[in-house]
Image (cartoon, rainbow, N blue to C red):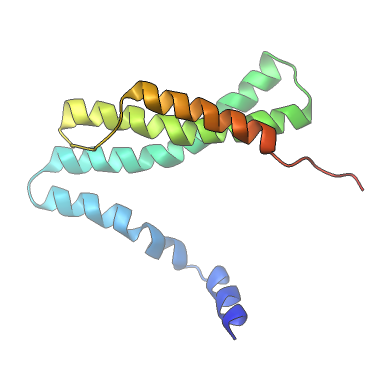
Length: 135
């Protein structure tokens, strides 16, 4: 019965909206109470998460295809590592910018720490990306 419930839940069309609702409602509530720039900064910070994933993979594919002439497997692995790097590094960059210019007060470590861990995690992601088996 529980398995059937989760299968139906996976197919539902409203579940993504319920999951993202707190990220949409929180900045709107901040804007409603008269702090428009802080709400805009929080919205930019949340949007940078998805932008980081998309842009990291895009730039990794671009570099591997145009500059490195890498094999398709290496391109796939670099794309995954780029996704991880963008996910871990772009939001802190945007967060530091919004803290400085829009007074959002997002608690972040120094940018160098975020860069270090983004590099380490993307390197790990490159090496643990599963290979396609032709069996």
